[in-house]
Length: 247
Image (tube, rainbow, N blue to C red; front, top):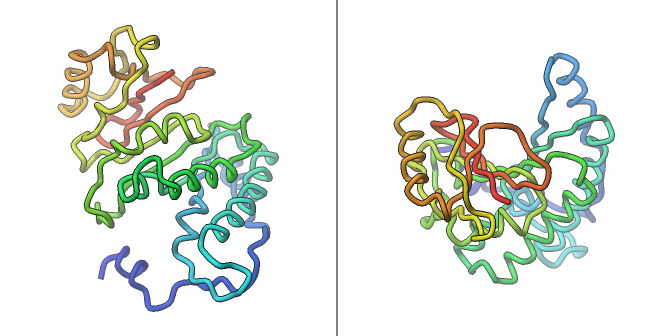
């Protein structure tokens, strides 16, 4: 079977048998080991508590539904992430918030989506001095889809404006850059020609061509580093380093 099939249809998911509390995961130690062997700052990545919480079976009366499980996991992970920050890590990537799944299933204004936004922001609370990256996909590896509708249309604004974070990175290699036109600046922030220094790849050229035709309403592209007060959408795929920057 496939990896996702083995996980999602597994005969027995991990069980929650008591109240979830923080116990050290050694993130600070892992980061220090990696940073000691690198000559540039090391970004630390970790899975989001809300996607982990969906693959758990409740076997205790202390929880009635997965929302409280996810919330307690978010609080526990926040403790670990703060310890990671205190150890010196200045760039943290959170993998797979589930907003795009819920927004397509229940709608972007649904209670499910609103709760997941609150849970994510609780997980990264107090990390304003850290560069936060948010990564999403639709069921990798090998583009295995776990939902038929894989459009980001219903969640684009949520990821760019509702979540606490600095960079939103999405997988696009096998999506042919679908939905990228949904990233739009408000009229007062628009202007200026696209820039960037992506590789000379046909996909990159197509992105630049399309953006040049709609530059007034599209996100500006920059290949430079983060600037204070800006939110970034990074496109993973054919154009490494290509960043769509929104005010």
